[in-house]
Figure 1 (cartoon, rainbow, N blue to C red):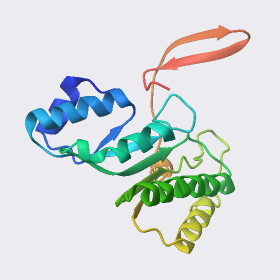
Figure 2 (cartoon, rainbow, N blue to C red; figure 1 turned 90 degrees about the horizontal axis):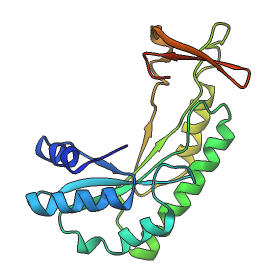
Figure 3 (tube, rainbow, N blue to C red; figure 1 turned 90 degrees about the vertical axis):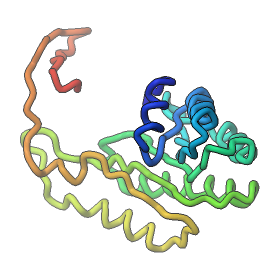
Amino acid sequence: INKTRESVDAAAKYGVGVMTVESLHQFDLIAECAARMRRTIRVILRLTNGSQFGINEKDIESLISRREEFGYVHMLGVQYFTGTQKKKSDHIIKELEYAGDFCARLMEKYHYNMEQFEYGTGLWVPYFTGDSFEGEFTDLMRIRDSLAEKKYPYEVILEMGRYPAASCGYFATRAEDCKTNEGVNYCIIDGGI
């Protein structure tokens, strides 16, 4: 999520295929790097859901409306991810509809030839003893069926995160610190979660 001038330069130098844009500042870093290197950089603009991640609709619209100004930045489309451990496929389908409507508006209002829409499903996976993998593909099938009903004029990519690998093994980590805050026990582990 964090990008520095050095990390953008390294990504461009080593040929990273697509960079996700999290802020206007990041867009500026990428555009400056692309112009300086005279190398086209493909980006996908991350739409926020009101959290600390991504760019708001107005700013994405501004970038799309001015896309001709950025000769070395190729805006592929929009990315949308709102969180993880979602247990209700109805909520996911509503998010897809919202993002699809936003993408349609971009295409129509700005004559934008969008190529990709990427959606992070954030599907629930069992983490704890007693959680079951029973029916684990039910929500995924509902999402698939919902997407199949639509005729998107761009490629739809589902970013599945940990979902496909969750049932494949165990996450082994070591407790580094334990504490209690306001009566709640916390364990800080070397895995970062």
